[in-house]
Length: 119
Image (tube, rainbow, N blue to C red):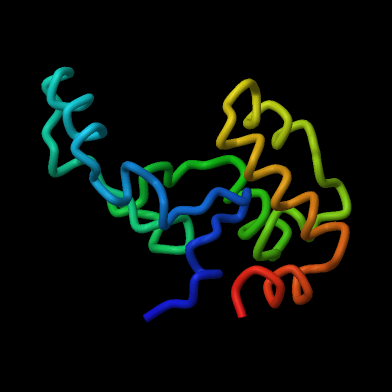
């Protein structure tokens, strides 16, 4: 079993609360109305394999943070918050919350942030 920290995505979203990951009825109803095959509605978080078990395998933030800069979280980056993060946040409330998680991480450091929130 992964720690709760495993479910915090590189951008700060809490994947454990995601309606796609949890396949909530509301989420499934949304896709049913669009006649989408419900077996395609799945995500095991951005720390899972980047294949068809990940909702956004081509995520620009994931690519930048993990594969280009070899970090675990955007909040570890000296450029945070960068243009990519700001564009991703937009007007979405849950993205704004995620950015604030990463802002706090940057302020107090990853280890302290993880200890405060998960251990």
